[in-house]
Figure 1 (cartoon, rainbow, N blue to C red):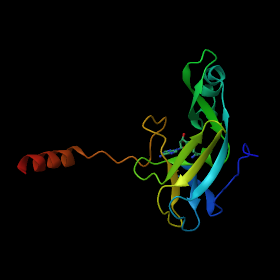
Figure 2 (cartoon, helix red, strand yellow):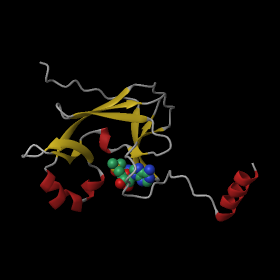
Figure 3 (cartoon, helix red, strand yellow):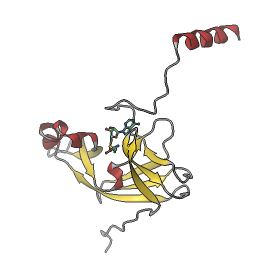
Figure 4 (cartoon, rainbow, N blue to C red):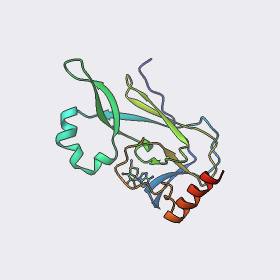
Length: 157
Ligand SMILES: C[S@@+](CC[C@H](N)C(=O)[O-])C[C@H]1O[C@@H](n2cnc3c(N)ncnc32)[C@H](O)[C@@H]1O
C-alpha cells in the first residue's frame, strides 16, 4: 500500500544520559555519510492547544516548527511532537552532522547523516538561530585583550 511508511533506524546508536547537553544520541560505530539514522512519526499540535497548554510545559523544549494551514486556509507555523530519536538529538551550531527532512503529507521526519560520523561522536542537528537555552558549544567570545590584539593586527596589515 503506498501510504505505508517503511521505518528505518540505524542500530549503531546509543543514548548517553550525562552529557553537558543532557541526554544525547551517540554513535557506537563508524556511520557513513547519508545514512538514514531514524524515521520518526509526528503529532502536529493544534495552534491554540500549543499556546494555551504545551508552551507552559517542558514539552515546549521538544517540539519542532511544522508548516500547516488554518481553517481559513492561511499558512501558519504549528508545533509538532516527534516520536523517536528526533526528540533526543541535541543542537550544534558549529558541527551539525545530521540533517532532517519533513514529509508533511505522511507526517514523518527522516534524519540522515550529513558526513561520516566516527564511533563515539555525538549526532547533532541544528535547531536554527533562536535557541531557548545557553548553547554549551557556542564559541567563547574573545577577551578584551584578545579583541584589542585582533584590532591591532587588522590595522597593521
Ligand atoms: C530536544 S531536547 C534534546 C534532548 C535533551 N538533551 C534531553 O536530555 O532530553 C532539547 C534540549 O536539549 C538541551 N540542548 C540541546 N542542545 C544543546 C546545546 N547545544 N547546548 C546546551 N543544551 C542543549 C536543551 O536543554 C534543550 O532544551
